[in-house]
Length: 250
Ligand code: PGA
Image 1: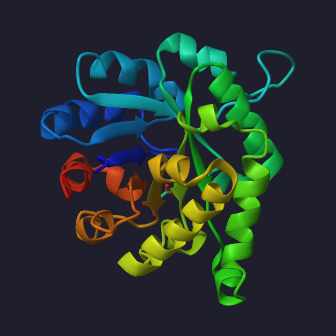
Image 2 (image 1 turned 30 degrees about the horizontal axis):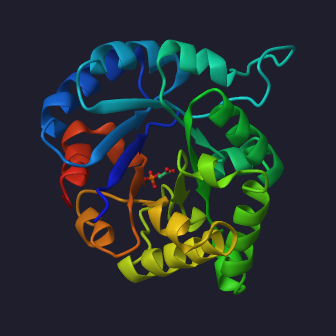
């Protein structure tokens, strides 16, 4: 059986002082888990997070990276810059970036490839909106996001990728997908990967659920057959809540 990968997505939260307090509280709470623990923090907290988590089982990720190695891209960060710091993971294509910052399947693919080339492990987010689900377009949207967003990704590269299925209607809303909705959607996503990469590779792929996962619902969600972990926003900002999710299924 796979262990679970539990990643916190802090989004645009936590000053350095706040980050230090949260990380110091979190480390002892999760030190004995068999699950993988990742915190994806703002760029300004990365150096601190890497330093404070040294020697612990908490891994550090960023929340975005550009697809070019360097150049005139004001405000962007290159994957090699993250790698040099000691960052291991990077969230790519979060729905907030797709909605507010013009992220498309093509830019998701470009960022993912660049992250992989730099030796980072991308956490690639996909998921349908409420209207897409209501219109019966969920499967078509997820298929497009996988087919287009992973177009040039090789089977070998896929082994370094985590996918996060995050229904947009469940993110930050307090409305969680039911255990079955999450599992069914992830099963579907896995079947799309299987068409391209084969069943063995698709079964080995880690696919997380994200969207209002918390210390109350994590056990049910993480107990489902195809839910390989969680990408947690709000509840990752409180050490005790995030730790409870980490320990919900081990
Ligand atoms: P949420 O966010 O847990 O606050 O819903 C999840 C995410 O956006 O990754």
